[in-house]
Amino acid sequence: MAVLCPRCGRQYDITLFQFGRTIRCECGTLIDESHVSLFRDLDRILGNLDDARKVDELKRMADEVCRMILDERLPDVDVEIAQNRVREKCRELFPDKLELFEMIYESRFKRLWEQFRNKG
Image (tube, rainbow, N blue to C red; front, side):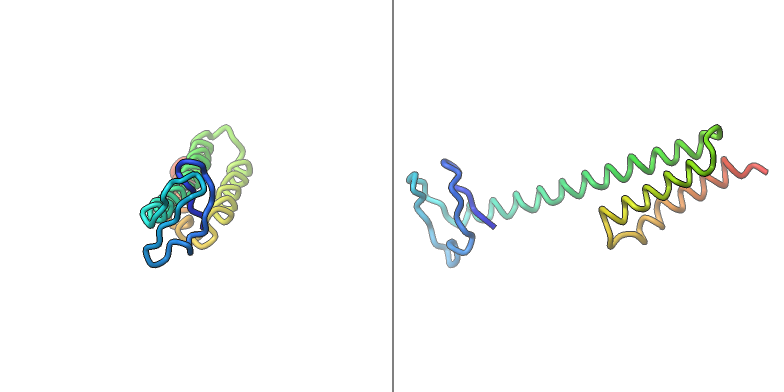
């Protein structure tokens, strides 16, 4: 990970700040361990934002499948294709969380299907 000078943007390797060392950038700005902490926090926050975006994308897709299930005019095969797309997107975005998808979304899809598509 690189630590950027807040004034000029020059990058410094994080290992330069071990043991509380302070670096003077070529522009004259002092960079210390507090900058390292700031960049670690920023990296963690951006990682969480990326996960939130992925979850939102998956939610939107699943909500669309739910709407499709409720619309009896749509052929069953179209709904099944959309369900498979959501499953594949989950596998792509969260490969280690597929069982969670099955617990949450598959059960919802199944319940809606039984309630609105299998009316006898």
